Image 1 (cartoon, rainbow, N blue to C red):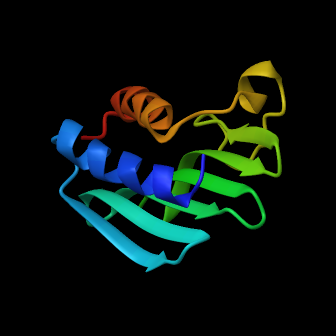
Image 2: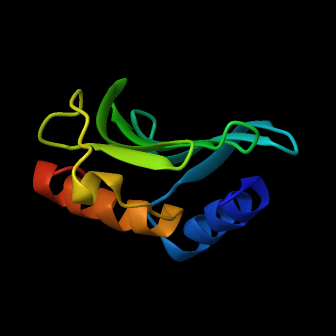
Length: 117
C-alpha cells in the first residue's frame, strides 16, 4: 500500500459505501496522506499513510475517542480491538495486514455491535 493506492481506495469507499457523508483530505503530498471519512460530525474513520516511514493508521473515532484501529509500523501491523481500544493486539489476527476496504468491513461490524449508525 502507498499514498496513490490509498487515495484511490478512499474515493472508491465513498462511491461504494453510501453511509459516508464526506471525504476530507487534510494533508497530501507525494509520500503522505491524512484523511477522514465522515459518517457524522462525531463519527468518522481517520486514515493516515506515510510512505517514507512505512506507517499506516486506520482508526474509527466516535466522540473524539478511538473505538477501533489497525496500525502498521514498518512491516508490522497491530490492532486496537473494539473491546479495549487502548490495548495492542499483536496476535495472529492483530498482525494481519489489511486494506482500507477490509478495515471498513471490520468497522461495519464494530458499528453494528455498538448500535451506531
